[in-house]
Amino acid sequence: MRCSCPASGHASSNSVRPGYKIAIAGVMTAACLGFALAATGISSFAQQDTAGMRMTRAAKDWIDSLDADQKKAATFAFTDKERSNWNFVPLQDKERKPTRKGLRLELMTDSQKDKAMSLLRTGTSDRGYQAALATISLESVLARMEKPGGNVRTPGWYFVSIFGEPGSEPGWGWRFEGHHLALNFSLRGTDVTGTTPAFFGANPAEVRSGAEKGRVALEGCSALALKLIAALSPEQTSKASAAKPSVEVDQGQTKPPALTGAGITADSLTMEQGEILTKLLRDYTGRLPAELEARELALIQGYPRSDLRFEFFRDSAAKGKPMTYRIEAPGFLIQYLNVQADGEGNPANHIHSAYRRVAGDFGQPAR
Image (cartoon, rainbow, N blue to C red; front, top):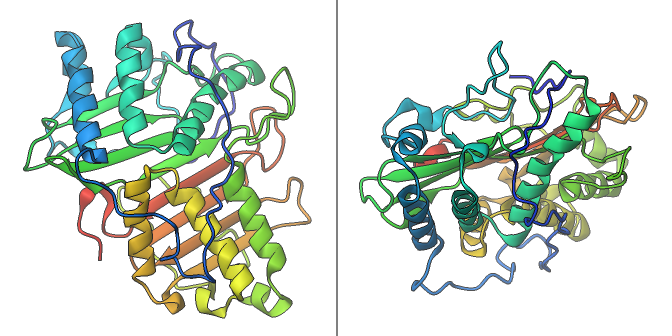
């Protein structure tokens, strides 16, 4: 599904409440020893109030605030096929009405919006939460940039869905989703069993006109990749670079794309280069609460450095210098894509970034 954004409708008067401050957080830059992901500085977490407990309380609190019609729109069986029907593109019909499932923000009261955003906070770090708010707020920027009559652009079109009964031991889950934002969580009771697929996008990646000119979204996943690419030797660059874009535009698949086994392996990097790659990895994992990030880092650390690969494509001669990259190991896949124009036509100013668990999305056991 290509995230094409050729035209726009008008922003709805209902949107995320102004009180939610939009701020682009900096990249988490915890020190590491060489490429040793064990040295992340993340300590053990007390069990008295886990992320899963917070999710369960917040989900129940939000559901309890809904009326009957809202609950009908917002809730699904845990086994419903809708749970794996994730999307990050605009979804609307010919009448420009939304077709995405769940209950959207603009149909909630202010109190219900607060509770929905509190649920979102339980699945994100402070930086991840700010990145989500930045993505949501860019809908208003697109509404100004694009011609009327196409895709509706409004911060009110972000949807919350609950699958199963929060706290259920057989399993339950929740989703927060809209254009360029798709976060999926799976649990058994209060134990979080899955945090993927997780998608953050930005259009425009850098606002180049209007009152917001100069504002940058998702800076870390771009800047750190460029820093790593610049640090590679010519021989390393030859191993790491792809002859064509190495990331599919169609990222929103139920199953992650197949691993390629291409690119440069982490054991071929110097200590300095390995530290940059670690920071790039943590730009993705650090969107999660610290205890959930620690679990993802443990997964990554469990693979030999020879199994961890980085591959990129960059066309320095083209306008905007389009770039893609992949970071993969047998258990996970990171995809980054910046080849599309933004809402004003500025080339390569439109980011897609995704973190996937290979055979482990939606709480399925990872290989």
